[in-house]
Length: 128
Image (tube, rainbow, N blue to C red; front, side, top):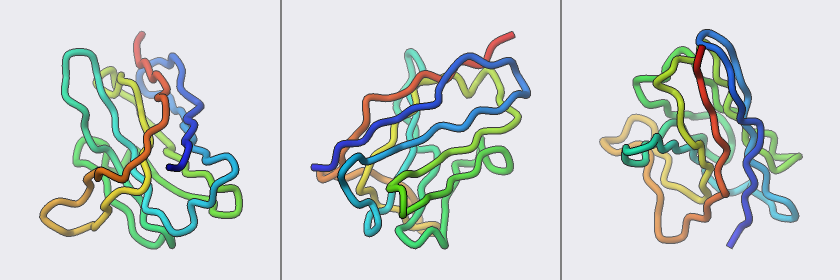
């Protein structure tokens, strides 16, 4: 299984930005679709975004469309989630997972599978 390491979380005020990263030290993510999920206290884990191996197609859950951007640098085996205009409701632990099923436009666009590996998570807190 691939080892994933998230970083970049923190405490920001509403309207500010953060970029979280998902790295796979010593492992190539080139052929894996990668997803970002989040879980807030007392809530179920939610799929946020995903990106296919080539980076040409992406998915975003409705609540983050227009504010979050997922990207990948296969040379660095790293996937990024740029989060702009953050809101208090974005507060959660953010996890990356790979491989995932990432099929933008399909009835179910992002799901994790039994083969998915997960990082340890990074806390994002949006508060004034």
